[in-house]
Amino acid sequence: MLVGTKEDLLLLRAVPTGESSGFAERENTFFMETSALEALNVENSFTVLTRIYRVVSRKVLDTGDDQPSVPFGQTINLVKDDESAVKKGGYCSC
Image 1 (cartoon, rainbow, N blue to C red):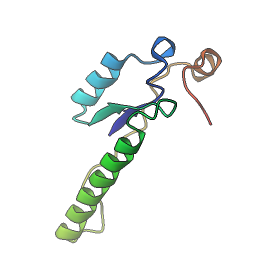
Image 2: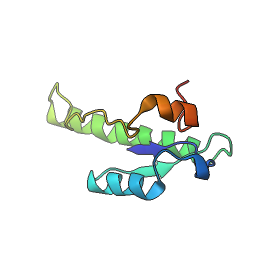
Image 3: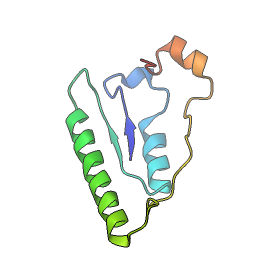
């Protein structure tokens, strides 16, 4: 699951919506955008993530494996220069 935050700040985006949704599609991952300021999709994102967790957990229990049944991915930094993104207000590091 890929969640884009700060949906309300359209002009200050570090990554355009199309790029994010395209990445999610290529990686076969669910994508949604949220805005805590406007209370948009915040609760929905946690609901979806909880459902994903439950499905994956059931699959692990069904197979009897101690290892998760989904492969671990790599951390992907979508901002090339973290310091400049912070100065521009591209994302919150809090």
